[in-house]
Length: 241
View 1 (cartoon, rainbow, N blue to C red):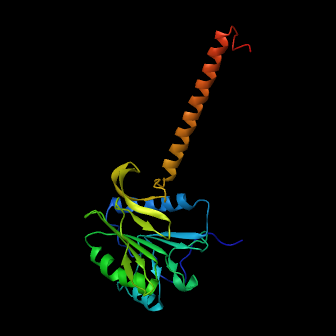
View 2: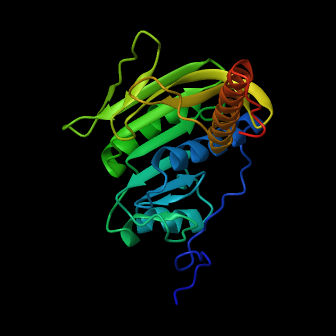
View 3: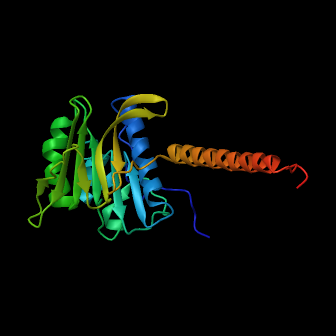
């Protein structure tokens, strides 16, 4: 039986000891993870990585070991058509048949916004070949999206009248939503279906199911009471019928 405990491939570094910028960044990454698994449940032919190293060359791996800033850990990414049940602590392209993320989301901060908008545009398009790249800067409220062209460069995804960006890879709209997630009222990056329905978190989906069940039970009770009243009007005791 295969071991299900994730182990780092060879001796690759899997952490950079750099903290995330804020509580919002941490929760937004959790939100992305909730949404992708809710969106594609029960599929297992995809892998979603959160704040995880992506290794693309041995040169890069050697530089990381030597404490040079060669690591690349997208805030959130999705790789389609792979075994999503395989344990991983980092994404190693040469161990994944040369596969790279199909979609990447970066959550900018004052210290990373320049890299996200310049350096990563080149790396993710030309080296990774990532088909879609989204950037959200919570400090400016700016949401950007890019799609890979045949020339291996990015062209901007044009937002619709709502300010939403269409993701061909995820088949969802990507936009901003103000509301409560994990007891925090913030502006979050959320996804909507092609029909404009908000992709729910597991908690939201369960709450909606509970509300629908409550309404169904109330409607059933109302029908029963109406029938009982009608029987009384006809001279019958509903408790003995």
